[in-house]
Length: 173
Image (tube, rainbow, N blue to C red):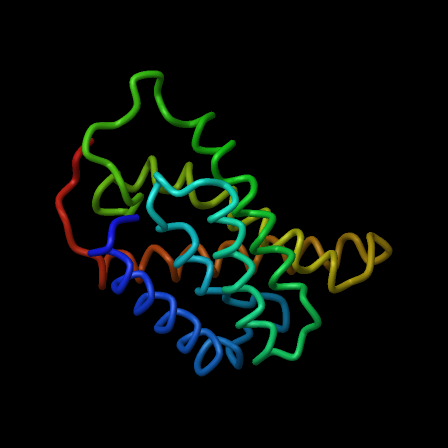
């Protein structure tokens, strides 16, 4: 991350966390679908960041949400997990030659198909970790799985809408 993008990333961090705790904390659909928009910030971090840096950013983001949610570290654990898995997942879905001029994986820079392949599994893993840690295990497996599924779909839908509304740039692939 160069020095020109650092101030922008800090502003994005503040905006995502503030919107999460001010608006999306209180939005729940049918007592099963929760929206975790703050992970959109984690998903669009620059690709050149190393795993340790990603995990530290995931930790700071998760702990910031946990402070406002009073949730004892479950957002932190889920955020650090997806930041640990992100480089592995990118290696699996990126073609052998890589992408030219791609430094930030936004919807407008990579297209809906690739962004969906990239983001939805990470959103699903985040929700899975978050809700099963919150449940304290697998004893309410199906109820918790419904929360994971509905929350992942809602979160991903809101991320897509946010990407279309607020991120600009031309498609490169």
